Image (cartoon, rainbow, N blue to C red; front, side, top):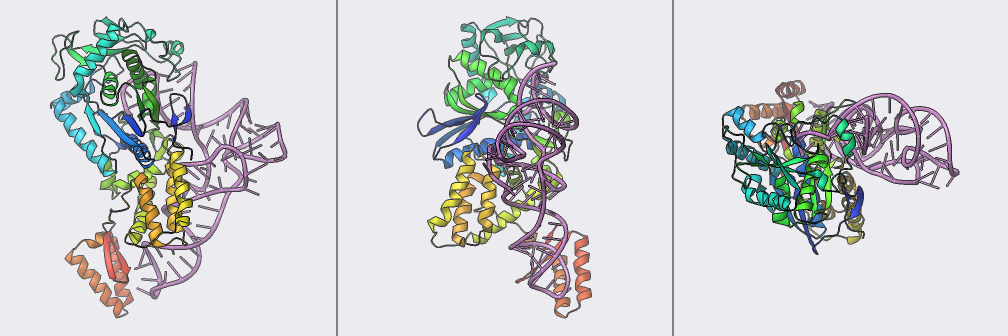
Length: 472
RNA sequence: GGCGGCGUAGCCAAGUGGUAAGGCAUGGGACUGCAAAUCCUUGAUCCCCGGUUCAAAUCCGGGCGCCGCCUCCA
């Protein structure tokens, strides 16, 4: 029994997770910037965090999971220039930034729930923690890490010796690279804004008073301030997408470690890889800027079950890029429906389990999830259970439901809403007419009706209880 | 220019030294009047070349291809 082993970006190694506080794990997850609909790629990082949380719970830890919502200050270009995304979205749509944030936050929460993500213990918004962010910026100022230029208060990365360590940055090379210096007065290219001043003369929708004047917080500040508030200045695990390693998390670490004088701020930093879009050799990451985003509702419109997206997610390891395309999601949908059907079949089974029957599967399942959350392997174990004829129904049920605490596929209560439940007098009549023709052995007539219905996407299912039908 | 990752059957993918998990699709079989659904079953010398080793998809070197980060992005 080796315990839970996780890949830690901070050390670039798999390490055994040992909670700072006995039996209790504190996890912080970088949530969405709610200026636009959250797409399937965004959902992947929520699913990843949720998988982590579920594994922690199954391993017997108490978990405090904090997820933030960025509803201000995330700029369109880089950390220092460009428009605030919330402000820009508001301007485009002629609505209040708060309205937009509320709408996309609600959509995001709904999607999260639909793919089976557990509710976080704390859901916190940047705009509701302005005071905490100012407080942290003041701490940094008091400790000499900041300087002021015309458009804001900046963090001086040269003052933090470990700055490049986390992301293994080559700051020298960066200066000659693609990065273009845009902000007049910045001392180092990597320096970033803690507080941005509101532009004189133009009134922002979102701005606050601060010791440095009216303005708004830099994007990175919220995560440092809120994680410290809800989890303490040192906690166990911080999660987010890989894209955040080099900038957002690097800056967050600088703020937290310098402001609160701790090291490390989070023991484990974990990052999920991206969803790529495409098939075969050509792939592109799914992102708003590439214009190839899909949201959960698009899948649902296609007849895909929301939990089938979770099943899809579980089929690949979280640290690998995963290729998304129609064939892939449809096959996941089929796979999920079949697995669910198997679970439904044994749901009501009662009786006693033979421990020796369960043990090998339990051991292999646990081994998989404890090895850096290897969901594909865990899912494979579930399928082996389904196919093992030496298991009794109740043993199968026991194993599947136990595994589902991690898989989160709602195997215990989800229903396969066969369209066969639907009623449509016209179709019902046709189905009955076919039944009658079959009884009379008028095969040609029976097949004609079946084919005609198939033409309009209605499929007849012959069962021992009689014929039913479903769409698709 | 710097950094990182990937390349395993038609597709999604596990597997990091001892002759390759799982799912979907395909072919075959059972069932069916024929089908559908369901169940059983079927298939890979692991991108190429060279090396280390008794043994490599797995390690090393060199190619080729793809993706990502260093600028907003999960």
